[in-house]
Length: 332
Image 1 (tube, one colour):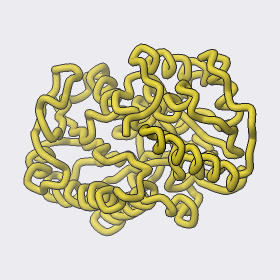
Image 2 (tube, helix red, strand yellow):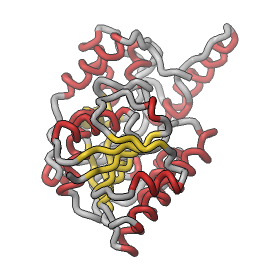
Image 3 (cartoon, helix red, strand yellow):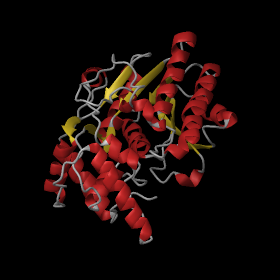
């Protein structure tokens, strides 16, 4: 039986991907994990202990596999973590690609982000043929590091014929985000921390639908191509209104200009700090709320079988999961 490798399996998308792969029973599943005990999902997996930044550990994990899903990475909006973001996403991907060249050139599905392409100050629908969003997405270390990660991986396809497919999911929502790496903004909404309706727009996709499309990419994804994986484009105001209807938590009624929103958030951070606590909405979150993240997923629907479920179902499952965990804001 063939074996596929998954890096980043303990993350939100990674866990759902592993479950999807096990359900398909097309290949045995091997995981690269820092610690064996960090994997608490289904037990029918092989675990190689090690870090994506350790070339020898990556060599052990890659040996003998027929396909690789590369999800290992760091999700952070904190500019202070820029060096760690670049190290993890770029050096780690380099380790993986070099090992793949030395071991039968297995097909690699690199999981990036739609923010490398689809980010703008005004409403616009992007596609995979759009250029990288260096001018806007590149303002934030996370997205800039993912842009360079994609470029590095695709250079191995261009210069070494290593079969690399890039998938670009949008905001992932749904149940099971233990670290709140992706559903943190919904947790902030449920906690009543958003006091303003920013003027931007977003795209989100159910993590279960994204996992199914990522799994399919190993079989039907075309090497050298990118695939935008999304579900629903809507304004932040529409998103908040839908959350209000599902959760019963009132949405913000104000719609302030960005500069006023920044000033208000700064004042709240000062006041919270003065009383010995932390206001959980940072400047990056405010700024991103005034940008647009719209795109078209037609290619992923045609070639990867992406079938986004209704927005209401995804948000209801997200809210239910967060409330079961009694979460009202992401950890700091």
